[in-house]
Length: 245
Image (cartoon, rainbow, N blue to C red; front, side, top):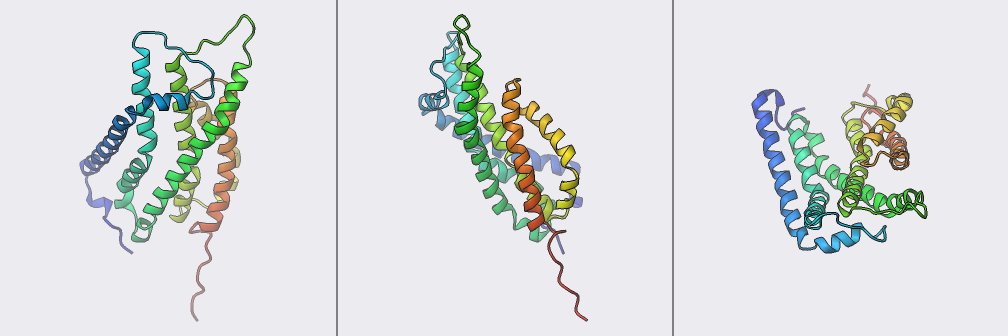
């Protein structure tokens, strides 16, 4: 069984050059889509602030900066298929021929999972979260929310959910390569719970426990789904053909 390209034939600088090429292509895709998105920045701002009644800009330049920021978030999110493809192409030289065939399906499903995570955040987590967090206001304590801070909060929350929803895809690929098995994942549940809580605390832009738990809950469900997925598709799980007598 042969690989597409033996990574041992590549020097350290070959790997660096390959990584640089993939990063440039990814950044170029994000930049191009961001520039196009700027045309629709007003609509995007309306879309991202629909879960709150009013936002304010606190300085002369903040409104313009928000247009740039929302365009960059749109570029990052919409360019995810290109970024994921470039990422997988970077690891292709170290894969076997039958594993390379999985790259395109993995990129497609990873993109769909990213969109699913972003949609879950936007349509479920953000409305519930904002209602909960703003509910701590009183007659004297009114919210005066900066549009820049709010766009950053929504943007990074959306990206964070999209990224962590990649968990089943990662475990599927690791299972197909024989690196992990469902038994390994079942034995590691207690460590997974701790890791999930740490990841949720690290990637959520807001330090409040509510946002972190809203991310940690789906993450644990995805972990359990990954256990089932690896059991059904992993190399170690699949029955081996019986040797002929």
